Amino acid sequence: MKNNPLPRLDTCCDLRSHLLPHCRLQVGEIWHDPEGKHRVGCLDATDAAVVAALVGDSSATLAIQDPPYNLVAFERRAIEDYLDWSRRWVRATYDILAENASFYVWLGADQNDGFQPLADFMVLMRDEPFSPRSFITMRNQRGYGTQKNWMAVRQELLYYIKGDPHFNVDAEYTDIPKILRGYYKDVNGVITENLERGKAATIRAGNVWVDIQQVFYRMEENVSGCYAQKPLKSVERIIRASSNEDDVIVDFFAHSGSTLLAAEILGRRCVTADVDPLFCEITIRRLERYRRTGKRGWQNSHPFEKEIPELPTPNGTGAPMQPPRDLSQATLFG
Ligand SMILES: C[S@@+](CC[C@H](N)C(=O)[O-])C[C@H]1O[C@@H](n2cnc3c(N)ncnc32)[C@H](O)[C@@H]1O
Image (cartoon, rainbow, N blue to C red; front, side, top):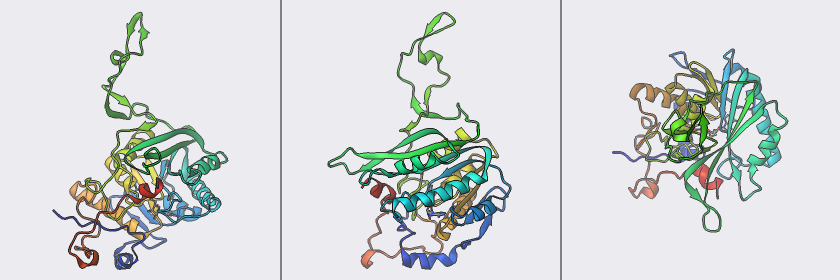
């Protein structure tokens, strides 16, 4: 068994210059899936013209966007600049979506800084043509900042719509068994309680998700080198509820390619992008590896194993490098 984790690839300059020549895409280029299902573009999500060119005449019914959160872990800007930037990618997304479509956005709230950018983004969205539908919270298992505060374990997900898209109400049941009796109701003159009336033995997913494991290095779906990977289960939940087979889904902040892979697994088509050629390459390799082996990530290995079979050990000690902490969470909750 190997334990060969990559450090965070967006900031590790030496490694970046070593790996960039192995990336198939440069900024402005598009990878076309040889099986004809998906597309990956290396582009800036705020550039409406290149986004439109990438999507072409595909009619996308679902967008799942996970932009950098304007927190210490990412490039941090003044909130006004962050909002201008957000407005640009929100509009670029709106323009390419079908008349009836769903729009999901993952975003963080910095509790040490006025809960930006989540609060500001929600206000910004009031002036955009999307309508708000739900405010979902996903519970992480590990938290931060617990000494003088509540342990911070939440991940926020906003759900908006354009027009009147379908919502597959029965698509998503959790693994959580129904145990609470009660909620009596008269059905055709017979008093029944909810366990008798229910169609399933488990509860439906509401807008608080407590049953999804945060990705960490021991999981099969882990993609070493990525610092902000969303669990496939969360993406699959969104896709099942808000799309049908063969629908086109977009995600312009691909990173580890979770949306692309979930789309492949669930028989949807995905048009995805990232501004960083390294993450575009990882996204493509993750799909190729899944098709070749059925594996969803690189547990105990990493996407560039061919190019760098052994990573240098810290200070030449021979000790393996520590797996990177989930920095998006660490700094999100400070
Ligand atoms: C929070 S991560 C997305 C995580 C992803 N949902 C996953 O599960 O792996 C944000 C990604 O957005 C990319 N990014 C940042 N600015 C961008 C831009 N202007 N256009 C496109 N991608 C951008 C970053 O390179 C990073 O990979």
